[in-house]
Length: 175
Image 1: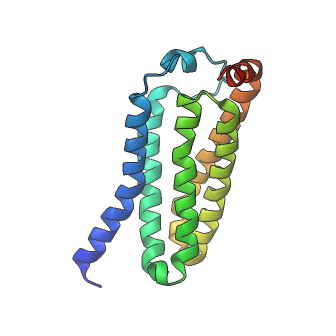
Image 2: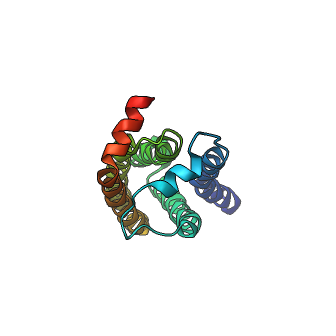
Image 3: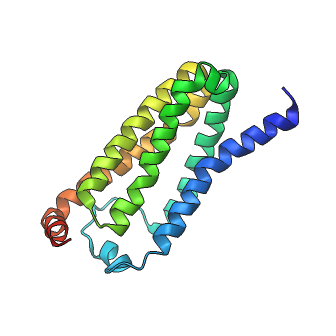
């Protein structure tokens, strides 16, 4: 395969998850919904809630690693015409469920359904990690930190849901 073509495929693989993250961030930042940032700051959150400034570099790192790992799987698993098909479809499902979380949580203020979504996202992250590892062990290892991060976020979402359960139910009924 041509070196320039490989570099382009690598760049596209890294840009795809990051572009989705940028679009999602601009979508969320642009929301003019009642309660907006005040809603989030008013939630009762667990003591281990990371400060807001942690999230942009964390997601950039995670999505870049996932993109690179997907390139390795694409390359070594012969793309969608080969062994990589199932792994890349799992990866796509993971990205979609991952990107769905912010609108569910921040736009709709629905902690319960964001918890359901993040459980799906974490499950697809685990399946993706395993599938990637089976094709390229380096790719699987690269996304292990993302899987751990997803587990942490699932715990955080669950704890936040439990701490705000009454508030969440009232808000859902009022919509």
